[in-house]
Image 1: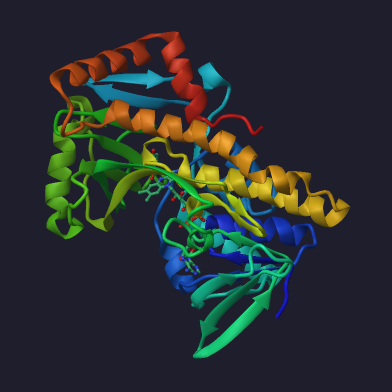
Image 2 (image 1 turned 120 degrees about the vertical axis):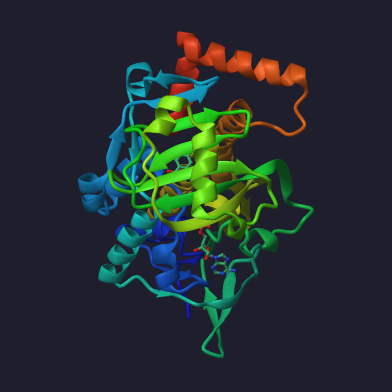
Length: 390
Ligand code: FAD
Ligand code: PHB
């Protein structure tokens, strides 16, 4: 088999790229190791920047998003029993959108099915070869048979645990990493959200986030130890702990109900540089991970893919390789700003087990400063809604 762009991974990054290339008349094949059913049900991100919403509209998958999304003009920070609202719209001119990653995954899969994009699900043992030569290729097994695809380029969109990044020699790749001493325990429930906007809570028992998927479906997260097992958390235990971490007026309005999903995600900051090796280009979580506190992961994946598609289209239409050559630097400039913001939001809102009394006091002062100063609120707002594309 032969294609122009071989894409490893059928998550948001892989499917967005395949769509952008398809619309530009560039052939792509997607290799995904999971089943379609698994991908359609996978619950992850919930908050989209306007740039991500615009991209989904530009590629014709925004119809349901525009009907069902919730638009938030503000966000709250709660600490010391008080609530402080940051008026995102007034401070930055922009709003954010609530629309689940699972919905985006479904919308993209529906669009690809209709367009007939070749997506190989349950592709096993995917491996990458000949990256620094003229004809890189992908090898995989499916149904007991081995297959080979010769490509012009390979896009590694296979997430943090994928194989693409591993195919870059260690002497080429520089890795920057910070692992946090906690994780997030998240639940989803068919209950109305406790507040019409998100609330990030800094409490002595640990961080808690109140978010949502719709007006009838809530998502809540609790800071827990990184090794915590979700199986040790009954719904009752979760709701009691959550109530204990919310300001009293918020806790009083919390509607509880059975959970539909419950899982623990570790928190990590990670960047691999460069995002290109020969004819392999990394995009999304394959190249970088942020702690979810800034809600940046999916939005960064969308930005990478926008740049990569632009570069590939320029190459095929005009033979100009300038954008391909500049891809890694262009992405990383934005990635590092989002890394800094996600790390900072995490530092501001979580309780660090090893924080000294001095550090704890400084954190409290920073919360008071950020929420009371217009400059402080603006710096949070302009990063939270998403920095401009360069
Ligand atoms: P993935 O979604 O990981 O997709 C990679 C795909 O590659 C997967 O389908 C995988 O099955 C496939 N794959 C892996 N290995 C192989 C292989 N060897 N062969 C073939 N296929 C392979 N981001 C936000 O922007 N906003 C939020 O509000 C937000 N909240 C989050 C909350 C939580 C609890 C978590 C865990 C994450 C959150 N994120 C958020 C981050 C966001 O979910 C990720 O950044 C996003 O999924 C990245 O997309 P991706 O396509 O790069 O990677
Ligand atoms: C979510 O809705 O799942 C969500 C929202 C904001 C975050 C993280 C997760 O910062």
